[in-house]
Image 1 (tube, rainbow, N blue to C red):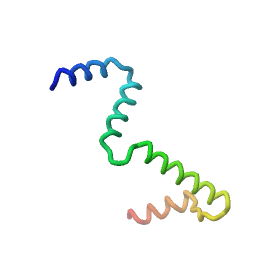
Image 2: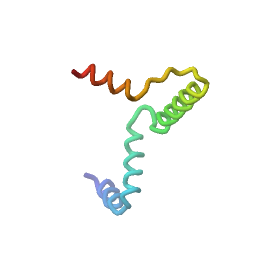
Image 3: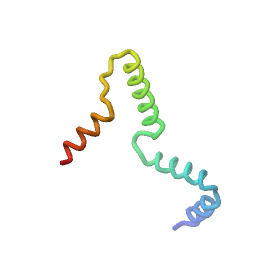
Image 4: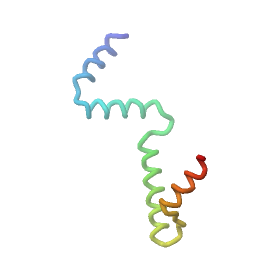
Length: 76
């Protein structure tokens, strides 16, 4: 391990748990093809579109009771 990497590790360990989590997220994001922010933005758009479709009555809904009943049926 290089001295620079060891110094970074020492500095990172001195951060708060929340700061370390943020750093870890940024580092992981830098390894991914699509940045996490892009993925989160896509999910936000999807949520907005689904909510709008529900509000307009365009979205077919299924009760939780029916979903769980079907899940039980499929797992037997």
